[in-house]
Amino acid sequence: MHHVRVIGVDKKPIGILPTRDALQLARSQGLDLVEVAPTADPPVCGIMDFGRYIYQQKVKDRESKRHQHSVEVREMRFMMRISENDFMTKLKKIQEFLGDRDRVRVTIRLRGRENLHRDLAMKLMDRIRTELAPIASMDGVPVRMGEGGRQSIQVMFYPKHENT
Image (cartoon, rainbow, N blue to C red; front, side, top):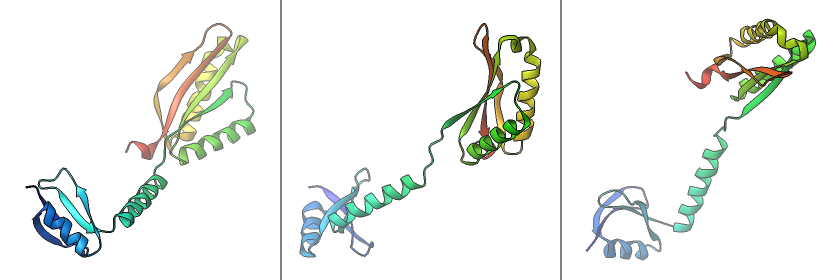
């Protein structure tokens, strides 16, 4: 004969009863016997309205999903010869992404002869890093991508509060 630990309607423990007796007790109150903790020894069952229990579980799941934030990787592309106004606009957008706890991949595209001046691209990347320093950390070092006339320098930024 199997035994279960029974919790009453008022959330107070009733005790350890044979399963048959616990089921009779629940039915006598017009309620159901619901297994709450199957891995416990003995399993824990509660006397409750099963329909209401399922509804409450769904509400809890919905509530927990509402508070979750899936981290996205956003991308912001810069050209090496960018105007000051465009730079500030893109920087503001990156700060918004980081404020939403998203990671941001920053890419500086080099076209044609700009490949000969990678040092200027690195200066631009350093400026981005120093502007974002209060709210973001750079993940590793900038990496050169691509070949020939279409090269770029990429680096990932993540919000400081993410890994602290």
